[in-house]
Length: 566
Image (cartoon, rainbow, N blue to C red):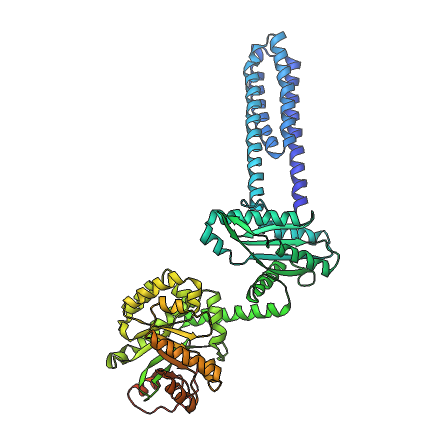
C-alpha cells in the first residue's frame, strides 16, 4: 500500500510538472513570437490568466516535494528573465503586470516552501520526542516495541527483552524529593549505557521502569552474566543531598522466539517475570515460563468475577460469633465475605482478596461489605447495644485519602451506632505508612469506633507500633492456636496476653476448635475466642437466632448457596 501511494504521488508530480512547463513555454512563445502591443491587449489578458494558472499549479508542485520547489523556481526564473529582457529591450511595458505576478508567484512559492520546511522540522521533532524519554534521553516504550518489530522483520535469530523495575524507588522520592529522584534515574541510565554494548537497546518505559533488548549473546551463560551485571551496576551508592542511597532492581526476562514470536507478547511476558522477581524477594532476575502466564490468566479471571459480583451484588456475608472465653457470653460477630464463580463454585477469600488488593478493587469490596453488613445488623444492635460487629478493612483502603469519607457515608446511610462497630486491620498497615495510619486510626477512634489488630504475631509486629497506635483489641492468629500444645507457642501466646494486659488491650484467639485449646487460653487470661468450637460462620438468619437465644447447631453447618445475580 505504501509503495502504491508513492507511485501515485510520483505520477501526480510528473503530470503537474509537464503542465506547468507547458504553461511557461506557452507564455514564453507568445511573448517572443507576437510581441505585446496595445493592439494585442487580449494577449496581455491571456498571459495574465496563464500566469495565475502557473502560480496555482506551482503551489501544488511545491507541496508535493522539495524537488517540485526547485523545479518551479528554475522555470519561474527563466520566465522572469524572458519578460525582463522584453521589457528592457523591446520596451513592452504592458508586460509589467505579468512580471509583477511572476515575482509574486516566486515569493508565494518561497513562503510556502519555508512553511513546509518549518512544519516538517517540527513534525520530525515531535516524532523524535514521541520516541524519546525527556528525562534520560533514552528511547521510550514505543521505541522498544518498534525496535523489537525491526529485529523480527530483519529475521533476527533470537533476542531477549528484560524489563527492570527499581526496588522501593518511592523511598528516594519521599525522602530526597522528586527532583533528586529524577537525578538518580538519570544516573542509573548512564551506568547502564556505559555497561551495555553498541547493539544493545536500552529504554525507559516510564517511572522507575526500564527495558533492555539484547540480540547478540554467545550463550545462555554469557547472557545470564550480562543481565546480572545490569543489576550489579546499581550496587555502588548514589549520593543525594549528602545522603547515601543504595538501590536494587528486579528483572523479568523473556526470549524471542522461545517464549513468543510477537513483540507485544514478549514485553508482557517479561513484565510478568519481573513481578515474580518482586514477589520472590526483589534484587534478582527471573526468566519467564508458561506457569506464570497461567497464573496471570487465573488472576484476570478472578478479577472479572470480582467485578461481576460487585455489579450484581452477588457476594454473600457470613457472621462468625465471638464469645467470652470463660462463660460463653456472646461478644459479637466477625463479618466474612464469600464469592462464587460463574459456575456456582465457591472461590476462597484467600484467592480473591489478594487479587482484589492488586487491582485496587478491594476498596469497592470494602465499601460493599461495610454498607451491607451494617445495614444487616442495624436492627439487631438497636435491640442489643452491647453487640460488636467486626469488619475487616484492607490497609490499601484505610490509607486511601477517601477512606474516612467512605466510612462516614456508610454510617450516615445506615445510621449504624459507632459504639457497636469494630474495624479489623492487619499489621500491613503499619509497614505501609505508620504516621498516616496513626492519623487515620485516631480519627476513627474519635468517631467512637473500636479498632482490632488482626493476625497478630504473623507479620511486622513492633512494641513501638502497639504503643503509638490507638488499638482496642489484639487477635491471636489461628496458626499459634493450632500448635498451642507446643511450649514455645504457648509461651508466645502467654506473652501476647500479658503484653495486652499491660497495655490495656483485649485479646481474642481465632481458630479455636478444641475444648483443651479454650481451657488453656482461659487459663492464660485470653478474653475472647472465635472458632468452630462454639460457633461456625453463620448466615444472617442463624446469627439472629443465636442473638435471641434460639439454638443453632454449629456441628451441622448448612450448605451455603450462591445468591441470585441481579
